Image (cartoon, rainbow, N blue to C red; front, side, top):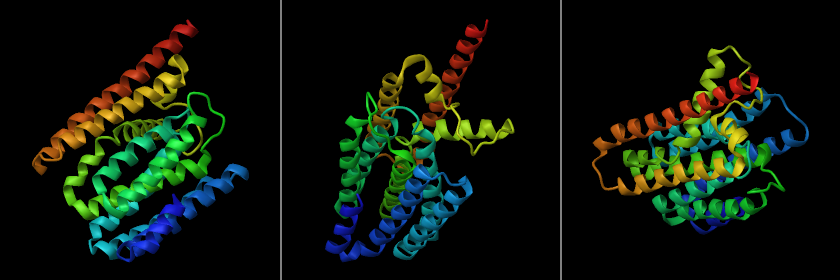
Length: 273
């Protein structure tokens, strides 16, 4: 993806500034992740590098689009999705299959130079996926998962900068990862747990313990694909439909998360009994 991004920066001077910022930021995120994979770092050291990378891209997005809201979205979304992809990369194929689907959606939504960046991410994910699903022979690690999350966020931010509020429909296919990672994190914080440490409490992990990796990865992919179809079907609707549609979609995802967690709790109690 970096090769494609740098090549596109050379070929399209109008997008060069933001493309170079994306390349530098992904290099930082992937680099610190790769280092952590081989020589574990403290979570705060990794987070510090993520903040710097997000700051570089956010500042550049603010300058390019002359919109402080786009800069803020860039800062928050890249920080969040970098770590969400890391959190959710816990079973075979789930992180790369979601990346493949979302990059296809972003490529179709963006078009042009940035659509080609998304195509590069889709191609990279498609090339990796057969080696990680259904049987895992290689793994993304922090370097791969973090870079993917940052790239998805950067592409989504660019879509917002180009398309404005209507790009909010991209929240629909992002719901599976955002809800599972977000609610699990909130629950751990409320319980007073060390939320920054590794764990196996996500809904996808609870389901995989009972149903296996393949079933869960395919189910999450089906949910995201449905979100993509809903996003494209809603493209021509008035912007006033965006908020109620997202609330309804995310409420459904929250219910699914709650049901999966309850099912795992019942299964554990049954085994203990």
